[in-house]
Length: 168
Image (cartoon, rainbow, N blue to C red; front, side, top):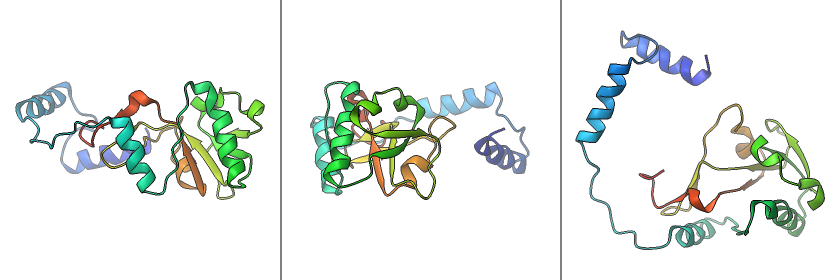
């Protein structure tokens, strides 16, 4: 059982429920959500990718766009060199398949340690309205890679840029 499942099981036990929700409990939750439509939202007629870029830059982030995922290592290497950062990083497994070596970046696929200065991750999604990233953590996406290193590089696919928190 994962830590998350452990915590949820303890909460359910305190409520006098079984550790795992039943199918009927899940159906009741789905029915409740479907019966209560979301509140009115402001118009968001802007392009989500453009808005995300504007908001992220306003938060002192750096944003680069690439045409293909294979271009990512070269762009990351250029960024690291421009800020005199080490050409070594800890990285999520999903991005380790890219040709980092050709770009001159040494990648370690593991959870981050306090000595790691650069972490490279994906992101669940990017929220255009606020310019923020939403991350999910798990065995293949350890949160330490985005939190411990001083420099965090997130690779976000255009299709994962959403308008607001509700879509995220």
